[in-house]
Amino acid sequence: MTFLETAPWMTWTVLLPLCAGICTFLFRRAAPWLGVAAALGNALAVAALTAQVLRGGSLRYPVGGWGVPLGIDLRADGLSTLMLAMSAVIGVAVSVYAARYFSDEGAGDDLEGQRHKRAYFWPLWMFLLAGLNGLFLSADIFHLYVTLELLGFSAVSLAALAGQRAALVAAMRYLLVSLLGSLCFLLGVALLYAAYATVDMTALAGLAKTGPITWTALGLMTGGLLMKSAVFPLHFWLPPAHANAPAPVSALLSALVVKASFYILLRLWFELFRSVVTLPAANFLGLLGAAAILWGSFQALRVRRLKLLVAYSTVAQLGYLCLLFPLAQNAGVAFTAWSGCIYFMLAHACAKAAMFLAAGNMAHAAGHDRIAGLDGITHALPLSVAAFMLAGISLIGLPPSGGFIAKWMLLKAAIASGQWGWALLMLAGSLLAAGYVMRVLRHAFTQVDKALPLHRVPRTMEWTAAGLAVLAVLLGLIAARPLALLRIGAPVADAAVATDAEGPR
Image 1 (cartoon, rainbow, N blue to C red):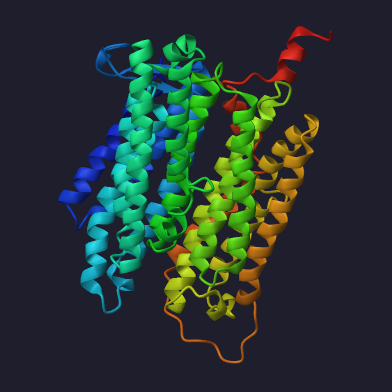
Image 2: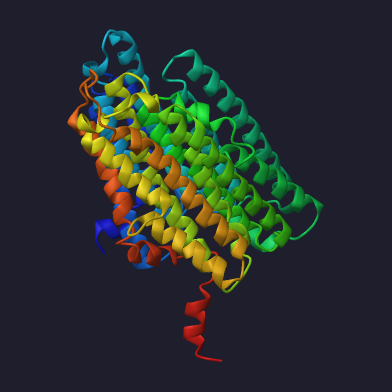
């Protein structure tokens, strides 16, 4: 067996960004180079881990040689590997973008402020990446809490990086919501440990049974994660936090951070509490998702700032993820709905990161992000506008984008199970998404008699946004391999495959 097949790549995905965070803090002049190198190294480690999972199936690694219940186990299956790949790809793109975004070239008169942001962005981003990777690989609920806290503190600090009053107020609100959500989650962990004397998710899945303690733990943990995921009506902190942060931070928060809390929610509902959850509870989460799609879309149609529009779009798009819970209650379509939800997370991450980076380019060039003041900006930033447009195609769900594949699978699950209400809601959400995307493009393509004076945007920043947008579209053409990886260790069975294996009845 080769080194690539036997090395503990799971540990490297956590240790590499953690060490890079310390190094970027100590060696600030070299921080951009160290950060980009660490992001690339992390991507290579994730690729090697993905190859291991494809060859050998789900993996567990006891850290330090101590197994359950004394030690910490890391676990990699299809879902966690796809989440790691999502973070790795977005991480490389945002790192390359941030190296130019925080350079002295774009500082203008605020050179000291720009250097301050650069000094703290890189260690905070590396710690956030370490927290993300550790969270996706966690095999027990206490380790999930620890990584969730590391992720939360890094994300809040990044949200405050702009230093303006609006950003600081939004970051403080984010901090309070994050702490409350973490407290609820920790109380749920304590209840489960008191009842079952273990925090390992595999062991808990076999021990958990219906009862007041389990129901209370499920309610607390779900409520805390819904806060952190900004699911309607607990979304109030997200738009100001994302809209007032620097562009690369907004991309990270929207593409990756909110997905981490939702990832834990999926693990809890479909693995740990799968014998406890009920159809009314699943339908309730579906209704929250429906409200998020409608409310977030309507807000995106009326706001005046570009980054605020993209932030409200995140609120709306997160609503689609919640539709998984009612759809998956039908065993015949559970795997289709599961696959559609996870693929939606991947497509949304690429599209939303591209959209925030493109919006950052426009704001950098114009000196503001007022939508009405972006008339004719296509002449100066054709790549950024093209990136915004391609990302919008995926968010709307037009073929051949990754968003189309994801929404098609969710629609297929809704129609096959006779849940027409959710299907009509998804179609309405796509029409609303088309409305707010076209609202921006209408101004961008407006003919102007006299071009406005614009600041120069480095080509690297434009190409990075365009690359992510192209990837969001290409995900619709390469869906077979990621969906095949998703079958490894999936907590829901594929009814079609089971029927084929057993033969016709």
